[in-house]
Length: 117
Image 1 (cartoon, rainbow, N blue to C red):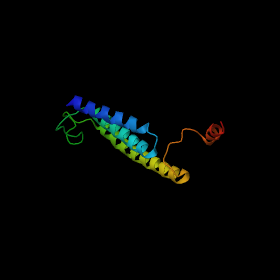
Image 2: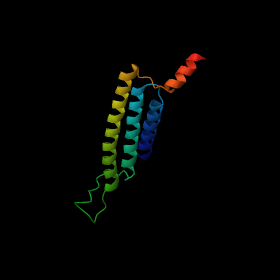
Image 3: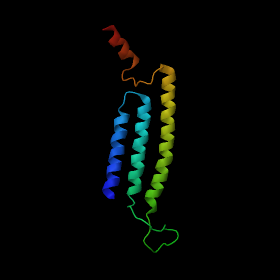
């Protein structure tokens, strides 16, 4: 079971990095989302994969699920939602200002200099 989760995290991370290195803005947004999903799954799995463990509130003396990774995942979900919203706003703004969703690797000065040569 642990190797399956580790492979899933590795695949989501690889897909996220591949999409983030794309030359267009929408795959970059999807890549960032995949990286946040992989991070959330990794944080959630740091609390061990325990089945049928009670929470810490009902039985404080018994073996229980670790609440810290759960709190970290909830915080990471909120942060990733805000980051995705900001990235989408920047991508849409860039599309409306430039008319294309290409990622411009050169600034306007370098493009003018390249066109003159």
